[in-house]
Length: 328
Length: 289
Image 1 (tube, rainbow over the protein chains, first blue to last red):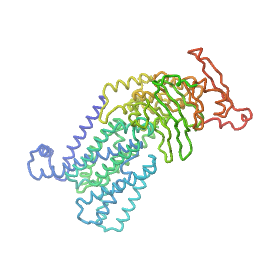
Image 2 (image 1 turned 120 degrees about the horizontal axis):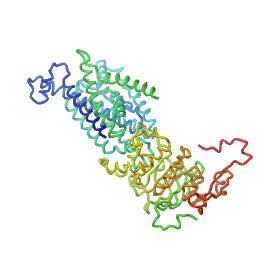
Image 3 (image 1 turned 90 degrees about the vertical axis):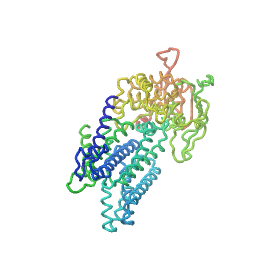
Image 4 (image 1 turned 180 degrees about the vertical axis):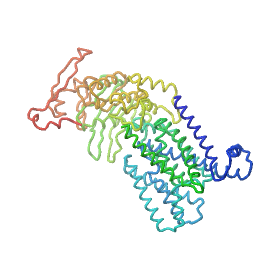
């Protein structure tokens, strides 16, 4: 127990340090002292004040909640489907969001302020609705993931079809959006994501014993009084809403939900409460650091954040596979 | 004929009344009725496909939700229809120990025993010291106090069964249902588990393949065949040569042996053999599962 407490407080500290570190990086040259002063409320000049509070703080905060949300969504999907490879992205959520974003961008042109996230969100909900309908017909959780992959490809091909015939400039924009970026986030994006995240966490805490019961099989959970079908549907919907909200503002950021819970299981535990708290802290810190890399790796350009998470994620995954093969 | 009948109706805990279950007009269970008194240890026996596991599931209203399935008749728990209980209340009364549990991820023994708290906990309630003591007591009772931090999947089949029984103890259920508790176990663990189950002082209903184990550990047996309750009574009453050979379609011999604890109490031992003309042909069919 003490070890667990130690682990969690270290992670909390890590998250805090990551957030502070995130505020230091950026194209504007602001010293550590100045950054600290600005955070504490006494900024030397107006420009720094603006850069810190209107650019960097929202960006770090959105990275934090987006990382938390994606990691939690992955953790919950993995526990409720009893599949360590489940990830919100495999359920067609991003392809759905991509389709929505594509249609909005190509039909509305430049007036996209609120339309893009809204269309992406609706697209994501559309995708997950199809997956859930299929799930209801199949009634087999083993097949749910495959259904998600199928839906994902279906919507992906629709998106590509539209893009292929679309206007090149708009097409470009969609493609960049799909790669994921935190460069345009604002403070109100943070409020929206944080609210959805908070509601999700409250629901998960309330139902953590029920989700745990699923880990030993549906029959076993049912004998403990769990309504398995309802619980699984609720959790899928919750993960969908969480991911859709994040994707709507940040675009495609893959592999976080797959990678982070995997690490948490190794160092903290597999039961839902531990897994979700650990995933939130590690996921949040992780995405802040990835965003720091995205901002500062190249001198005069930003790398789309989704490219980095996918690159890291795929390497991590191969590493895990090789390691488990060796231990077996 | 039946042990339960002579007992006072006040101690009647469970009553199964004309229970039938069919899927697309295929009868799985046909018109089954029996009463269970508090503290009885009951074995459900019968050939594969007789409906043993289905009966276990239907008792707790957990029959599979299959299209075309129709459940008729009623089950009463403490004289109240089981359908009037919520699933949470049912979980406070019944605990199920499945044939085999496969844990995904590295769940520890404690993680699994802790699951038994679920039916007794509110949504935001955390585990207190009382809960922890209860988990500890359950593990001591099943002889696994030393293994609380071990990974469930690394335990032997017998130990896994004992973990599940510890979970049932934490669940504080008064009726313990076991589905083939000895199926994956060697002889030593078979006896260890059944002995443990018998000592728990709760009502036990379990499906058992091995008739001799059933005879040795159950006060009362229910013999099922093709969904019908063929016999209900003490092992001496149920395990008769004529009944068994007709149900299992094999000639058999039953020998009455005095039990080790009480020489006046007889315990039937059952021996099956293939008739000589079939012995030479394919005998693989006799091996089930």
